[in-house]
Length: 318
Image 1: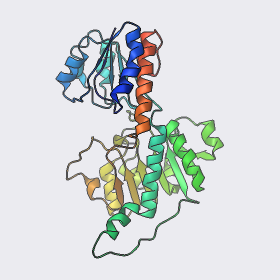
Image 2 (image 1 turned 135 degrees about the horizontal axis):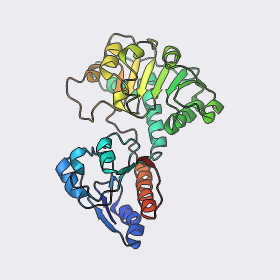
Image 3 (image 1 turned 45 degrees about the vertical axis):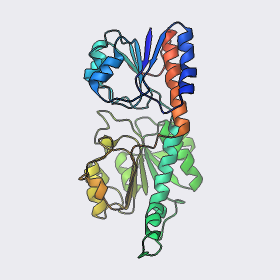
Image 4 (image 1 turned 180 degrees about the vertical axis):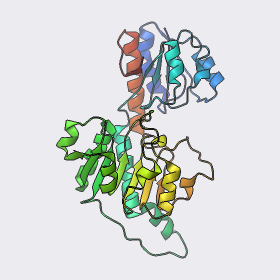
């Protein structure tokens, strides 16, 4: 079979070579493209006669399937697979795998960072002290005793809860499936509406799909306390970011930490969250740490090697 890695994985060439060697040892071809492209025609050319392609978070649209006559597996070095045209994959009978779990710790730590930044106004303080007309210190808040609402208690939601537990917070959760592990940490499952109404901090940990698209509408967000903050390091389209910006500017929410948007950065100048008050924005980097990149490279190559040996791992579609 021919295996093609269509884009870099933010790890060293040495690691790529080491992880690819078992594939070659089995007699399969391995091709690596060390530069990234978002051009559908170029992606189609790179796919060519591959049996397996590995990608990261570069969109893989319908046009990229135009030469995929031999393609059996799209192996995604990412948790979400919504950037792959799944209908096109279904039509051609192509399976899609992911690399869930590679960045659980990284994303959870980023969530903590955004919360602490908003509660202690660290970014604001950094800017304020550099100003010639220093406005004076700002009074912050402590996490201890606060209620954290976790929307989605999958691996990342649970990891976030485990880290937050050390701060002495209480938990509410809303999720399709209730987890014993969550309950053991003191998490109480409630309706989405109750979670939004009672939480001091709401953090989102859901995948993006038809059921979660626009789940946190402006009306839903308006249920939150005016002292509450929202954190989203999951998927942008889950939250109505324009509605969120309105609520922030109207003082109906105390703050937001947002790492994901309804498009990939850079954002247009008129994107409403850019002008929202009490907002910390990061450019979709919660997952992006040295360790996470190594983790995902190992996972995606392991999934490929397993498939070549007749074993299906991490299959999300097909």
